Image 1 (cartoon, helix red, strand yellow):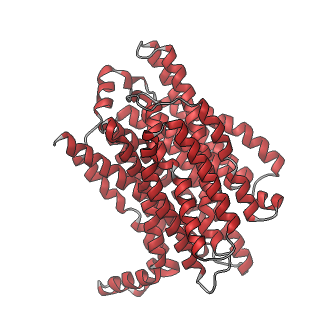
Image 2 (cartoon, rainbow, N blue to C red; image 1 turned 120 degrees about the vertical axis):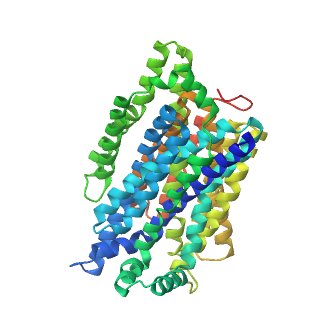
Image 3 (cartoon, one colour; image 1 turned 90 degrees about the horizontal axis):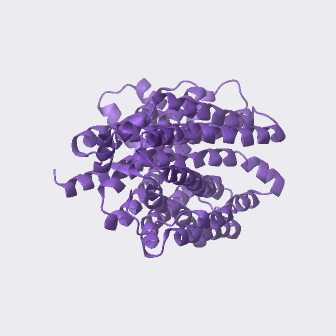
Length: 500
């Protein structure tokens, strides 16, 4: 296979993997509540059931974020140890198969557990795909490639919004096909009742087909192969993953502390501060020990070790700011939209059209942002991302009281400008790390911010209580971008530098 075709196949695999990842991330908000109402139905009043569903929904979203953070570190470690392509097939298999298994759940806790395992693969796929594509593509093409990967997940969100708009017709068509193929009424009721959540979850196993395409057509990274020949990949140790396991367990306890079943805010705050330090220590253990072994063996200088450690913390904070802004405010736009004056529109359609607007904006801006970063530089681009993301979010939440043309224009702008970071990071994060630790470093940086986002998202009810309205709460959460405007000046400028 020619090198040009190999690069294209790697990009296609990474794009489809991240697109299906985005589709499955967006799928649960669409079908999660019908699924939980089905599973939790019993001796409850309507108010009790709604409260129970909301509690479980919040906890499942939070566990998903923790799982994605853990998976980013674990599969990044695996990619640096056994190769990008092999690890990527395992990550896609994990998120596809365990999403599919959710369709057979009989209890709410089973959904939470299966979504946690599926999210391990979702968190890992990004780091592996980005590392592989950046190492195969030439420097001159990397900006557009980064934009394509950044847009991929938002294409998945776009597909979910379109599915939501055509859900009734979709269910009717699929049910008709099933009946014509001889499916019993009992099977149809099992698969297609309650918004067809079981069928849609089972369909989430479809991306597993990508595994065969990847193994047959996608080549391994030449840069990683060189690292393997040099012997540097042998410095990774399975025993170091105990730190990742500890970090995941502590992160889950932090989520529990803020859940409705948890502790009072004062105690939960202490647990979060101490716990987050333990999470960082645990997630960084594999790469810290790798750096020590590599330096001892003469494969890495002391200065390189210090630079990598610094970049791990800076990269994670920059990504965490973007993720908290996204999950804390922008992702709430569809849900918040049905609280406005709808002018007779169906709430479900308003939510879908809102997600269409935000996802379309995200596709456009994620594609263009890395090109801007190549024209300007990395620091200025990140600074502009923070300024425009904060301005567009505050404008969206503070200027809309009804569903009209301006609402969808501002939703498009907010969706695009808050997602601009996800075109920026596939370009910037690979530049912070050498090939030997690139997948692990990216996985840590991009995904550890999800834990910040998970804890931050659970504060929304508290923020509403403190500041009076959801709009005020979203405004406060959006102010996190100010931290990014300051921190980016301490981050390395990597424009024009080749991947190490």
